[in-house]
Length: 207
Image (tube, rainbow, N blue to C red):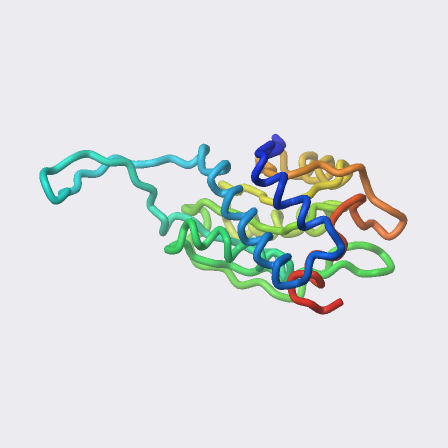
């Protein structure tokens, strides 16, 4: 299932992200802000629980999330830019990390790092990566998480290519994809068009 977050505020910030003139510091802040707004939309799928609390005047029943049930999993390195935004909304969530890079000749993902909290099968995972291009890295990351026991996963990206959506949906039909935009496709170097450029380079000013 793919959900495009058709929100005017997200669209406005995405327009700024796409602009090649946007400096790294502002780009980084925009990625974080978009991730915060996306969590609000993804959160419609979260299960809340009723508890009783005391207000200054009386007791009442309220709905809460058990933030400790969530794990934010950025795909390194660009996913870190989104994870900071997610953690501003769910500050008590755990954080796991998956390190993948794309081989420049084969365009296939290569794993170089993985560190996760325990008991993934009992958690809700929010996997972040600003770009869903070929889908290779996302498919590999999601399979790694499932191999570690994860059962409930949401994939969050800012822009997606149709090829990446198709590949992830075919390999992991049980993982909902949330994106701010579906772009036209990929160029000969497998970069998304019109895209954002290299999100990692723009976030970390390594152009």
